[in-house]
Length: 383
Image (cartoon, rainbow, N blue to C red; front, side, top):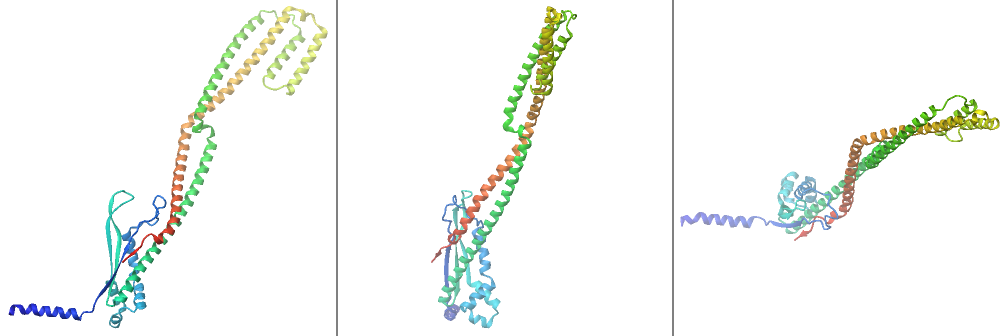
């Protein structure tokens, strides 16, 4: 019998303590963290923090001394303790009576496509002696958590929108500068741009062909010139009429001049006037030497030789002009790789900025839409 006495005493004390202790009530809310209803391919959320991090931030704000004192005073909580304890001690007690626990599950990560552990809900409970007040305070705390979450998300969305707008403006300014640089670069290197590479090569080939053709023609003229000079050298130089010699000289000068200028040039008009005057005198005088066959042949050969030399001079001038064009074209072709490298670098920078600008613009529009979705993004209160 003596061995049973301690058990009986302990049991009696436990029953007595249970009867004397006040009842403790607990009210719990379960809050589900819902996914965004609108598909992510239409609008991406701008609030990128993890649920645990947001809960910690919200919890720190709700559990602040000022916030909890406001609830204590408004709902007249802990009246007995307030008579014996300081405000700080009562606030500490209320923090102990509030319980927050997260609920995790395996979910599919949309970014990686793999299953991962994530917080999908959390429970918020409050304990106290008055069941009516316990339920009331639990509801108040739940509302405070949801409202604080909404404020945080709306603020984050607004900040994201402002940030994206600033980024858009900065990218737009960069794009304007790059576009201006491209325009200036194209203007400075207009004839050596990559898109003109094939045209420049074809032009160079055509110039080479034209130079070769002119050289063939000059070669033919040189042969003809040598032949005429041989014939002219075989004719005696005596008995030629001075007037006729002057006429031949003037006609040669006129032929050479017309290869370079038009009929309206003053020197052309002057030569034609002098030639006309000599021809008129020759027609009136008909000197004896004019009737001489040798003089007539000399005149003819001299005129042909003058015309041939004028033509040869013209061809030589054309070759010089073509050679300058060829040199210019060769410089363009040689500069093309350097110009293309610089042009490509500018275009790559432009395309990169355009891509970034399009992406930021899309995200900016999504951020504006997301601001309107945040109110219904997070919460439903489960009993």
